[in-house]
Length: 379
Image (cartoon, rainbow, N blue to C red; front, side):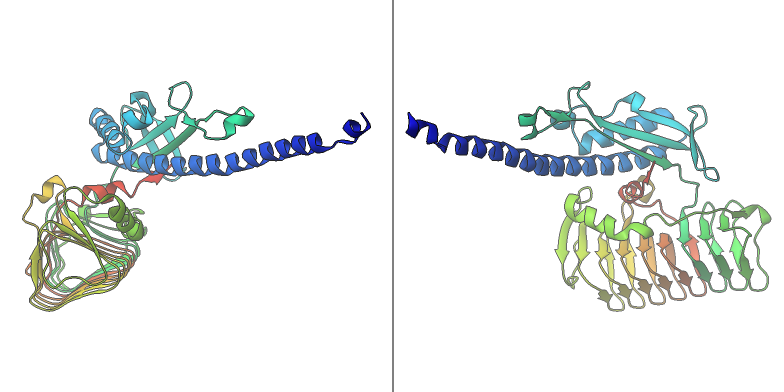
């Protein structure tokens, strides 16, 4: 009996059990919280992109709703994640940029809010691995994103200045926007239904004999959304790819480029003069420099979001006599293009300046659909 009363091994077992439960609780928190944050990040990225996809279709709310639902289903299928968004989770309204207020207004929308959710009421809450030991079996997660309809500036957008030499020709439907100003050389011509804009007050400098109507001029605050997110766009392409393009990640661009390939280059790209290619995308984590008489063409249908492009986390430069047909040029830094561009059907976005030497004749091609969607605005 005395030996039994002095026995402490049972106490040790109880202590070990308590410590074991404590460690499971702490470990469960670490594992389940990490998983929850990961899921929330994925849902937020999806809601961002779905909102921008819908905004592209405005003011057609029905089409915008359909596009957003399709985008969510494609990226996070209901068979795996449950129904994340329904028609009532896609709300249309107006965005007041001055007051920074979104007001529901389905009749005349210029913005859309898309909400994704995993909740117990929808039977798709995020299940927890270990916290069930302490009575927590699931977490509800909700993300929300807002995107504003494009204001019609498809053409050239520079976060600083747009500078173009003499004999500028800006074709019908093109928009040229330099936040801090635009400079044209002599004999500039802007079509009556083209648009040129800056931050207020309007800041345009021209050489002699310009032919630019007052109706083409506007003021406002616009940003080059893709140019400000080039690293994220390239990272996303490396993970998810882009449509039916074959993705090849390289440290140096091959000497011969293959149609239908998206080349992600970890470094600078330098292409010699007289080099021509078509139907490729070049995404460089660095600068892209193309010699004179270079050509990059898109033989696909650019009006249906099939533009090809060059993306750079640094600068993009083309020598004189370039041919740019149906392309996107998107640079986090500057875009520099030499004189006598023989064909320029392109969409340009620069995080700093766009500089084009004399004799540019500029028309535009609709930019890559996926990259516009990646430039969503969170609400």
